[in-house]
Amino acid sequence: MWLINAYKEAKIWYKVRKVALSFKDKLESVGFRVDWIGRIYTVINLPEEVITSAPQIQEGYVLMKLRDYDKIFLQLGLAGDIYPEMQRISEDETAAFLLVLTPERDYLTLWSAIKFIIKTLLLILISRIVYVMLTHNWELIITKWNWILEKTQIIM
Image (cartoon, rainbow, N blue to C red):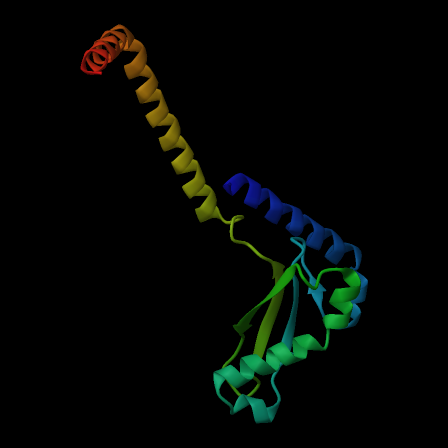
């Protein structure tokens, strides 16, 4: 299942990267930048009245500013494929957030790939051990199986 899910995520990532790089000029004209991986990012400066508010209100303001750009992402066909990640840039009076829009990454991470490889190697190792045990003891297994079948026929 991991391979299938990782493939689906890679396909979405490739689509987002391709669209972001091909419409780089359009995105830059509205204030976004695109890096070589295909991430779309911008810096959103907070106004004075929001800086003194709670962190939840500040994050809400950043998300409200993102809503201003929904039309562009809908036109590009990326609205359902990208997710915002926010990171505070500074704590002083010019507080700002870095807003990065990337595709979802649940399976295309190093840790999930390592877990998949370890699970696969353990499955191969266990399968190999069972195979070796069966091939070396096959005659004994057949004789025991026949003995069990004989005993069950006597009882019936």
